[in-house]
Image (cartoon, rainbow, N blue to C red; front, side):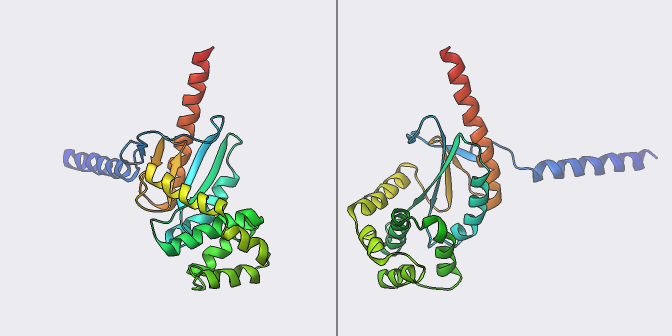
Length: 216
């Protein structure tokens, strides 16, 4: 009888231990790491979430619909911004320019999913400038407006700035999420990244509220 009871208790303990191991802890070094030094954000009144990405990255293609759906449900005090980066690759520079040029023409929201699909699903080489230009025109983008934007100083400056930000945040791979210039979400399953981002947003919000209360 004692052996049966000991066996039962042991089984329950093993089950609880298994559940404990399966649940990831929200701890620095596992779920997130601090950004050191912390980076400035554009609007201190907002909690800024940055996604460093590239259209050339297949994981970014998988992450895009998840991020889009998540961002659509965020409260008004949170802003999500995307930063295309190149890692010094000429081909990735062209698709970073594509992002900003579509932003200028007003076609970014309409075509972003199509860009990922063209590269990773249809195997269209949008890394090549000629192919890229032909593709956007077929998608209904004004050729003249796009061409001027694609080769503009403003777009080139934004691409350069994106790479500078990636260096400041010490980005090693994409997609990568940064929260309010203070925290980097850890390397984990794509869906888990957003769970951690939610927790970091709550953490930052709590800290902002605490600082506000301290000033009164």
